[in-house]
Length: 207
Ligand code: SAM
Image (tube, rainbow, N blue to C red):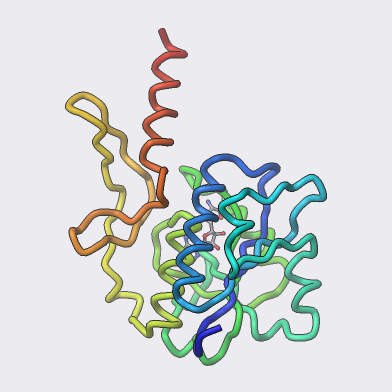
């Protein structure tokens, strides 16, 4: 692992691995590998089948054990990214913590605070600002802050972007995203097509 590469743990909390989560996790695995870190998907049910996109990634590990068991001896080195934490994440947290923990939950609107399931376990928490992010965005921002040492308020964002599929179809995403150099929200490969497919399905169901 390259110097400074951190461990990013997503504790799987949803019943199953839906197509959205699969794309998010593949994006986390690829970006984490490229930045010299490692990505652990923890608390996986015995029936969990590791998708090919993750299985082939050398920085990825699938874990049946939960984060409490994995870090039983060193809980103070784990930081929970928690939308309700009283302190925002800062570059110095890269020295304080080795591992960063996220809820493996799909975003919901309004947010249902399922991160509370991890908060109860007593890990120290940090917020990534006031807006809900997708899990891959939350990992991306955390990496930029603790590894690249970019202050949270210097990360380029867009809130609630509108995805335009064609002249007549668009949808607003109720989350905050990091933007690329062209000012466009960074999303996992394949996500745009998946969202458009889901939107088309809703229309078909209405017909
Ligand atoms: N609606 C959600 C809930 O029930 O808590 C938020 C889920 S969010 C899609 C997935 C994970 O990303 C959260 O569990 C948290 O670890 C992280 N996250 C997202 N936005 C965040 C923020 N503004 N501050 C800290 N962590 C955040």
